[in-house]
Length: 345
Image (spheres, rainbow, N blue to C red):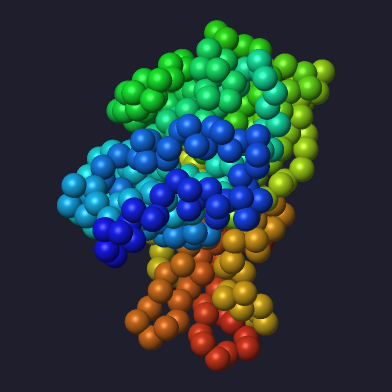
């Protein structure tokens, strides 16, 4: 990429893309123009790909300024932290734990929030601070509270917000607890996914208020929920689109090793054999995983791949009572299954 080409990639180009997609609407355009994304992205990033939860290798702004700029102004997520900050080297860590979200997702969720002038908003998951800055420009920083569990991320985000001229309340704490000191709020938006809506969120949003949050079952898949809080403190509403966010730390699943399920015995232990015409390859896409997860709660998959192109799909329950395996062999129309425990996963 030449310097001239790099300069053509920027806020105006991204705005055009987002408006063509219908994600960026006229009411949010002034905030987009006033709050440039690059001011809320750190120097070291791992560029993502649109619609995919995969990252490229690390890009450092001082070393590859054109690639960094192009990644920031592409409609794709940018990973900014691995393994809760414990991994900072080249390449990639084990698990991404913070990011600057895909712009289409950012503005689609802000649109679903349906904010009005003078309203107060509680944000769960400050991240780099970009979302909080957009809300601050639209509503006034005095009406925005943002909660971040990671102290280092919160400090960096606060600095970026202050440099941009915004001073919302940035609170370091567990997002599941919200921030009751400023409640009730008119709106709540989460930039991390959950598998159950914390009671504190519903208690801190006034009746008639809206909660916009990514929700995903234990199994996998995810969608954005738009919930309206009722007088009795319950909240209900539709899913409004697919999503792929990092799980809120308070609700992360701690997976138990397979040896605990087998009781120290070699596979298949006491597993009962059967065969299935359903290929493991047909149940691995995002929407299908979401549907499976909704109907089979508290269970999760893992794929064990082999050099010859075959693999085993492991299914386990979170209570460590039941497991199942399905062996995938390319070209086959029947697949061997073993399962054990009270739940026929």
